[in-house]
Length: 170
Image (cartoon, rainbow, N blue to C red; front, side):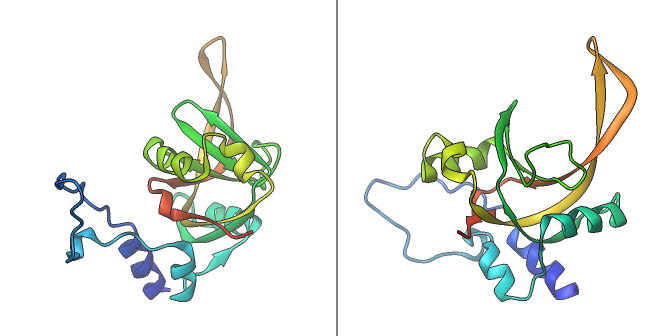
């Protein structure tokens, strides 16, 4: 388990933006700081746990408020933009307590759109994806007329900051 945690943390080391290089020149030597994060397949190969959505939701609830690290494999049943983030859900109803939500940040979203096209919904709906990250139970408050009420529910989110954390399995 400890080696899996170290493998995951090594995968999330952010690569600092490279200084612009002159056109038509590619670096030959790759420095350790320029190492890309680990992919989900590489994490599985190195022994990281692969979890189904229902397993991720249960483990995140048990571990709350701590996250659960792993590779999460799910079939995309819902995909939509909410504010700056794009969400991929394992259930059609995102409020379903069994739902695992993949929250893709703006930077990763731009890279995914470059790779899969502008219509991510068409590219990913119904596909099975693998995601390397940490699942965390998140409290979602209900609002009425712009004010927060005392009602809430929980969702399980896996935040994505780098597009290499997601791969299409089938």
